[in-house]
Image (cartoon, rainbow, N blue to C red; front, side):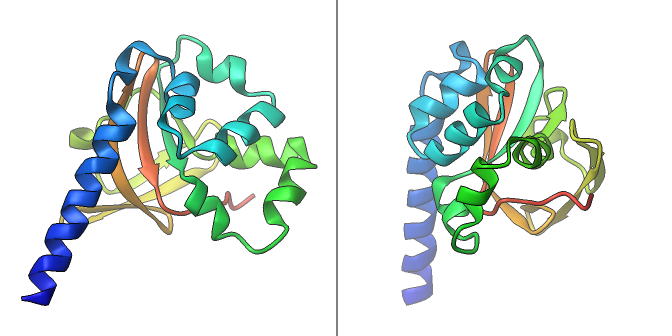
Length: 160
């Protein structure tokens, strides 16, 4: 019975998170959608520091696997600060989270997908759960005027 309540609570939290992130975002670009969601403050600051705001406000379309503030908080102490001090490295990491085109959840297939950064992300699908490298996709299909955001729970790092 406890497991059933945990499952229901997790489902309700997921739906609330989805509603919060996606409400009215289709008329906003990716950057404005992230800003208005309120759970991507670190990501937005990183995008600004890396000089990627204009790119992510451009026509696109883009698919962004967006780590939440909680995902950034999971990084070792000092990592975010070090990355913010190294815009080139930060740009490489952030563009590793972006795929050209608009890939909706229903179109996701297991395999590799090339990122804007140049490396490939490994996508696995098991039991309805989608993983991007070692990150779990927690919210899908957050619409933006120039693409789509899929929320992930971990910052993924490129191989190169």
